[in-house]
Each structure stands twice: as structure tokens, then as C-alpha cells.
Image (cartoon, rainbow, N blue to C red; front, side, top):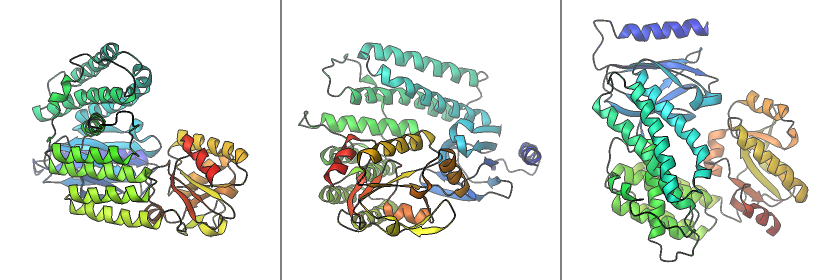
Length: 459
């Protein structure tokens, strides 16, 4: 049945291109979500929601729009991916949520552009596995490696564009994305080797002169955004007067300097607001000082003029205030593996570390459970409670069973949206340490840092 529907949907798309009454500017998008994590697909242009498209009973969706301009868009279904649309496209996609990026493929008119974008994205993911070794090289040898990798991408691009099918607008975006991925790696090289005595060649940073800080079309493209984020991190460090101070995302001086630089240098208002919002939000996720949290939020409101961002930050600041050290952790309802419900406060019997995991991040959940196993032996005075942040009950239960995790310490949120908001969960690495009465002792712990063990010893 599923294959027949796929064929029928694809046939419908292709036939749309030949019907005489089809509007030239119409864009058709459709496809299949395998192992869906919800009942809709959302389409965005930047931060603006274009539409929420429902899945049918067979997990298919179809959507038509006559007014969308050419350019980059984002579709989301729990995870997200950027793709490119232009009037006249009839694009079909298929994705399996268990391997979202790796399984995503396109067919129909417009497919070649988007399959190229996906291939370049996946190549970058593979390249990132090589980078830790490359970051140990000298600047000259590192540049040679990057040039070699860049040539591979250029070759792939030329194969896709053998008949010169891509128009100039898309061509500029792809070529900029290729360049920005490598500029980004050079910025990362600088950050990794920040405290080493390295002499950089005169032209090592010459590419910085070509970074466009006001590009409207690229502002939501991950290659461009990632480069700017790393560039401003390094720029903030270069403007720091105390070079011996170890600066990072959780350091107030560093992040405040970064936000001020973004505010003064980025000329695109939407891009500036987005970068300030995300830099502030990322800092709040790791900040352990209520005073510094308050200062960074005040700086945010001075530099960001996006009304939606301001409202989100107000809500976020209120939630963090409720989660400050000394307050009682919110009493949320949890599901057990035997399909009963229990509230969080009732399972806290002694000092407890609460951590989170998702069945969609296998490496993470295996590693974090291994860490907890080690911590449990070392700190028997603590309980360790695992809370799954998925909505698929059976998938979660199967992982707990197959991995032989202790069902007495494994739970799933009854209402995930409420839990995300009240506990401000935006990262799987976030953890809480609470007393036997549920009083918060640490509100932004991370089991993967050496400081976590120090935190356990202090409580």
C-alpha cells in the first residue's frame, strides 16, 4: 500500500508539470515521513512559519503554494533540514526519522538542486570526523588539507551541474556555502589552537575580507551561520585584553563581548537579532551564576529589537528564575515503562541527579548511561533518574528493554512540551542535581564535564 501511494503521489507531482491549467508560479511539495514523530511537517522561510502541513493516515503530505519566492527554506519534523525552492518546482521528499539526514532524498522537479545540497551537507558531516586530527597540523599543512577537501566538493558540484542547469542565484548560494564551510573550519582551527604558540602565515586570514555580514539570502543557511558564529567567537577573544583568561561559551565576559561585536558589525537586522538571540540562549543554557544570567539578559534587550525574540527571552528568563538554585524543581508528571503515571517529586528519595536522553541519539544515550553506571558506583549516596524526552512510548520502552536499563530509574515525560518549557530543556546534556526534598542544587549540570563529579562531591 505504501509503495502504491508513493508511486501515485510521484505520478501526480510529475503530471502537475504538464497540465495546461497549472500556474507557472505554483510550487508543489510532498512526500513521506517514515517513523513519524508527529502529525505534521512545518515549512519555514527563515524564522517565519509558512505553513503546517498535516500527514495523512499513511504518513504522506502534499502542499501547494502559488506565491513563494525562489530561495532557501527549512522544513521541520522534530529535526530540520534546509532545501531550495523556485516557482515551478514539484518536489517530493522521503525521510526516515531514525536516520533523518542520511535517509533524506528528493525526486521530481527541483530534486537535483536539493540532492546536491544534501550531499554537500553529508560530506561536511564526514569531514568533521577528520578535523580533530587535522587541527593538530601546522597552519600551512592544514590549509593544504582544506584545499584538497574543497576540490572534492567542487568536483561533485561540477558533476551535478554538467549541463549548466543551475541558475546564477542557486549557483552563488552553493559556491558560497562551499567556501564558508572551509572558512568555518579555519575559524575552528584558530579556536582549537588558541592557547598554543603558533605563528600564522600572513594570508591565513585573508578570507575574512570576503565574509559578507549583510547577506539576506544566506542568513539561514547553516554554512554561513556556523561561520559567523565561530568568526565572532574568535573576534571576541582577539578583543579580550586578558589573554590568559580561558574564554568559552559559559564565560560572561566572552559572550557579552561577542554580542556587542555582533551588534556593531552585522548590518542585516534579522541576522543580527538571530545571532544575538542564539548566543544569549546558548549562554543561559550553561550559565551557573544568577547574577551573570541577569546581566546577559539585560544586554540582550539592549541589542535585540525583534519583538518575538524579546517575548521568548522574557519567558525564558522567568523560567530560569523559577529554576534558580534553592528553589524546588517543578513537579512534572512522568510515564513509567509499565504505562502508569507518577509525579517527579514522589520518586526523589535522596540526593538525586536527573538527566535526559532521546532514543534518536543512540551514541549519546549509550554514553550517558555508561557514565551514570560509573557515577552510581562512585557515589552510592545519590540516585540517578533518567528521563526520556521523546513522544514515542513504544520506542522508548523497547530501548530500555533491549539495553537492559533499570526500569525503576527510567521515565518519560507525560507532557513533553510542558517539561521542555518548565525545565528549559534545549540540550540532551543538561542535568539537574537536587536534594532529597527536590531543592535545586545545580540547575545546569553536564554529566560529560569533569565539573560534574566535583559538583557531586560538593553537595
